[in-house]
Image (cartoon, rainbow, N blue to C red; front, side, top):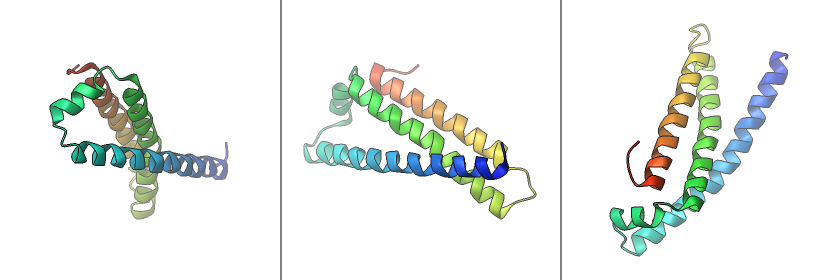
Length: 116
């Protein structure tokens, strides 16, 4: 695959993930405002989300969109600012792994009501 084709695919992946993130952030903010306005405590919020598959799926989609979006952006920034360092690819992979691991662990923790 040529570099131009790869760049185009990464560009599309980042734009599509940005669209998903925009929707997820908007929904997440509505949920926060609802919780704050209702005066819910952290324990009450966890009581409502524990075992709720819809919340788990929504937040895992959020995690997956971050998993795609952020590493591409970081790789681009590093490639533009430090082009000869060779950090762009390893740093973006490390970020991707961290986002996926920590985000999914958080989703599972909230869904199951406990730590892994």
